[in-house]
Image 1 (cartoon, rainbow, N blue to C red):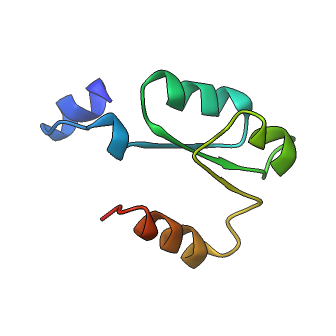
Image 2: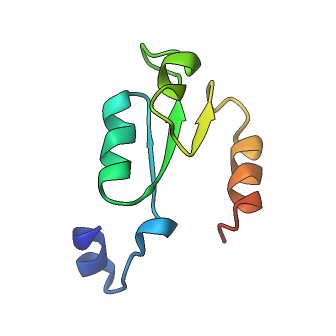
Image 3: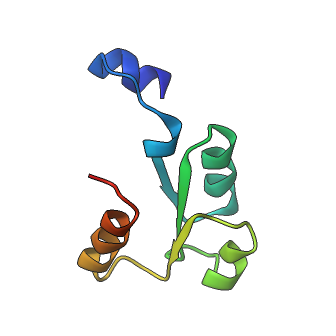
Length: 78
């Protein structure tokens, strides 16, 4: 977030940052910086396995990008 803020010259508030990944490590990374976490079961971890790490959002895949965007919009992302 610091590098992004320096590059774009705007602050990035953690609650407006999403870390998207397909491993428990990705979820842990997002939580460590205070970001929202999105797990997607496109790798070797299942939805159930990823859910155990309590991501903010979880998807089986991104085959329906509109559903993903609708979810973000419902959360208040602009």
